[in-house]
Image (tube, rainbow, N blue to C red):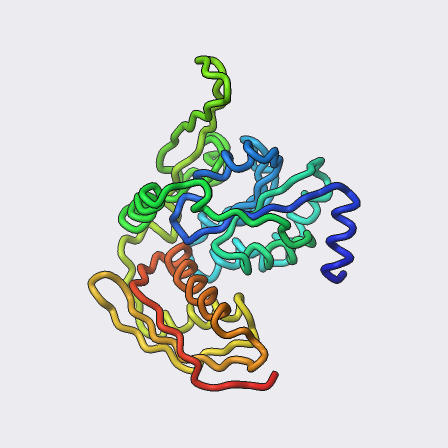
Amino acid sequence: MNRFLRFTIWKLRGKKVYALIGRSGTGKSFRSKLVAEKYGIELIIDDGLLIRGDKIVSGKSAKKEKVFLKAIKTALFDEELHRNEMISALQKEDFKRILIIGTSERMVQKIASRLKLPEPEKVFKIEDFASKEEIDTAIHIRNSEGKHVIPVPTIEITRNYPQIVYDSLRIFLKRKLSVPWNKKVFEKTIVRPEFGKRGKITMSEAALTQMVIHCLDEFDDSISVKKVVVKNEPEGYNLNVKLKMPIKLQVSGTLVELQRYIADSLERYGGVIVAEINLEIDDWTSS
């Protein structure tokens, strides 16, 4: 089914797809319920899970995976069984609006496509809902402590993933009328994923090269890696990646997105702290 037909079918059903994007660790899951409340969004797709209100409707969490490749595949619904389960769940749910959370527009578009949803008609950025100070604090907590947020109550997570639960927190959303009882409370679960329990990760150049190759394959399989040079600096890994790219691609925008996607994926699912990524086009292809 092509994109136009899929979009038309969902529009006729009165369904709208939204997205919330931002770098790994910037607080997207933390603020997703506030975004959903503000825009009347009933369903959230976050790291392999389908969430309605305080309940996990379907899916499995990428945060329970122990291996980088497995975690990123789960988040992107790469496995057929996981993907089909989610598609079936979406068809059964009564909703008008759904929010997909991801690190980039390309990531949420890929998730939407794999779940047979239209591309998001509105893309929110985390900077629209959080200050620079709040984002910097969130990134510091992620990088130093390896903590993540799943936007459902702790009891919902402990049923399936008790081993990753770290703590819980409550968010009070003030409504327009300033009276004590006119507040809505969201409970969120702080987790320390399996891939984030190992402390600072030290990896070989070969292992990091394989991770980068996998990221490119997920981002755009027409781009290939020719060489990866790795330097382990005190502030994190410095990666110099030489690429072979099709001439048809819009280079500047693609490279910026790709740079962010690799860094976010390595940090989010591999526990690897990236200080800098330099992308260099070493060769071109006509296809």
